[in-house]
Amino acid sequence: MGWFSAPEYWLGRLVLERGAAAIYLLAFVAAARQFRALIGEQGMLPVPRYLAEQSFFRTPSIFHFRYSDRLFAIICWSGAALAATMVAGLADLAPLWTAMLMWLTLWVLYLSIVNVGQTWYSFGWESLLLETGFLMIFLGNQRTAPPILTLWLVRWLLFRVEFGAGLIKMRGDRCWRNLTCLYYHHETQPMPGPLSWFFHHLPRPLHRVEVAGNHFAQLVVPFGLFAPQPVASIAAVIIVITQLWLVVSGNFAWLNWLTILLACSAIDQSWMESWAAALLPIPARPGLPGPPQWFIVVVLAFTAAIVVLSYWPARNLLSPHQRMNMSFNPFHMVNTYGAFGSICRVRREVVIEGTDEARITAQTVWKEYEFKGKPGAVRHLPRQWAPYHLRLDWLMWFAAISPGYALPWLTPFMMRLLRNDPPTVRLLRRNPFAQSPPRYVRAQLYEYRFTTVAELLRDHAWWHRTLIGGYVSPIALTNSDSPHAR
Image 1 (spheres, helix red, strand yellow):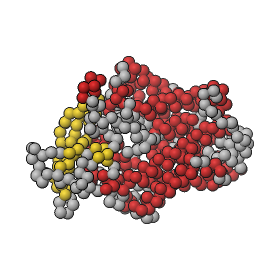
Image 2 (cartoon, rainbow, N blue to C red):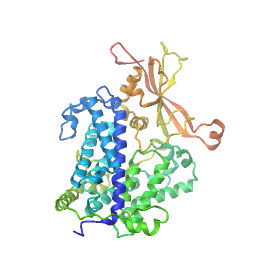
Image 3 (cartoon, rainbow, N blue to C red):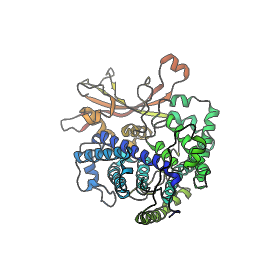
Image 4 (cartoon, rainbow, N blue to C red):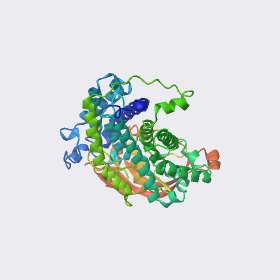
């Protein structure tokens, strides 16, 4: 079955599989550490309440059969433990069918989390991880050479990620077409990183070059993935480089890292050896046996299913009303992707404050809660969190854009601050009322901008902010624990 196997992509498969397992590990750990405050039984958007309105066929999840915070934690830590063993290479030591079951188990566990995660799990990288993870089931292990059909499906996924993102930009905000979006993006992106201030202050002509390079990488280069080698490898390397640029300029969870891993699978090992052997220690290709007959049948059936399911995302790519980050089925298979079809020109931030004073007056002292990732105190340099995902911080960015994004969860969040709810407080960087909870909390809306070089040297501040006005009026707990506005 020489047509079926592609041993020259052995190293690319190894990088992709170990990397995907590492992302799974990170995703399960993040879910375990954040779920109680977000979607737990006493969370802002409780899973039991959500499941009461959903059917299993609409949102397939283990939690339809039973939900408890304890079970959710067990699912998370079991998934993390299994992913860790696969990062260490256990799947390559197991029989092929066992490795497939291991990947399937990871996918089922994480699908169960995503399908009950509601707003907190509505990001494109969740679907990307699930789709990538499902492809891993059919990529084989060290017991057989990589199947070429699955490798082509991986490239089809990578093409949709890159080309979809490029199209949504060209069809969206005109600043992408006139090459000016990066005048604003580094400053207004959801969660800036430690180098975002420096990227923002690059010369404007270089920003225009960045945008032009992005268009080339997302609208032209992806077609090279389907070309013969070495063109496909060169296209993959270009994608890796542009994704690394995004990694150092912001915090986008595991989106960029997963895209890099997908691109690595398209790099031919022999081509890599011809130019990179002097720079990188490239392991020799092991002897890989041919695939068992049953594996060929399974991969052929899976490929046929993906071809059928590809109709909907392909139609979406061709549509002038293209939608981004959308799943066409509850299993998050063969999705459509894209990001930043529009760019904010001004950054707004919702700042949460509290006071322990019994009465609110003009002289009331308000103390600010600090978040781990989103901008707050002006002298704090943004941190690098990606590929770890801070879900509350990301949703706070959406809340600043429009109150509609925050309507279901912001008041429950503030009510938990009034009780110093331990799982909620753990989501924050600093709680100014660690000893006893505040009597009132409120939300203020600010306009933020990066400081100039002169302002940074003078004030030692990375941000400058201006108060726009109130966002949520002060609220307090009543005897019945319901919010009371004043």
